[in-house]
Image 1 (tube, one colour):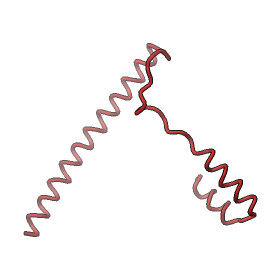
Image 2 (cartoon, one colour):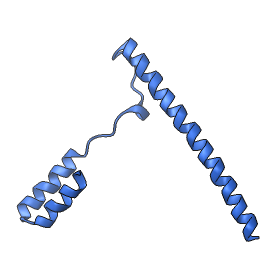
Image 3 (spheres, helix red, strand yellow):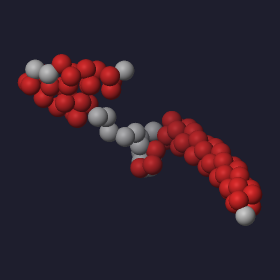
Image 4 (cartoon, helix red, strand yellow):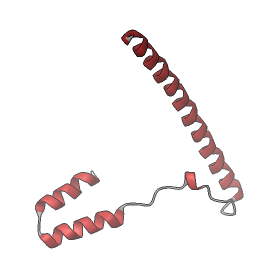
Length: 85
């Protein structure tokens, strides 16, 4: 029974790996096509939310640094420094 389960897990993991590669290729191709079209059409092309960059975390980091400075804790500043490297 254990051998059957292990074999099934290997087959499933291989299937997931294949699908993951296919999906990665599809998304990469879609992003490339969108970028090419945006270069031709310009800003009039509608924005695709899935291709938008995430908002930067600068506000959250700045708040942490400010709090650490106000508290005068070196640990807080060291923690922030490690996160940014």
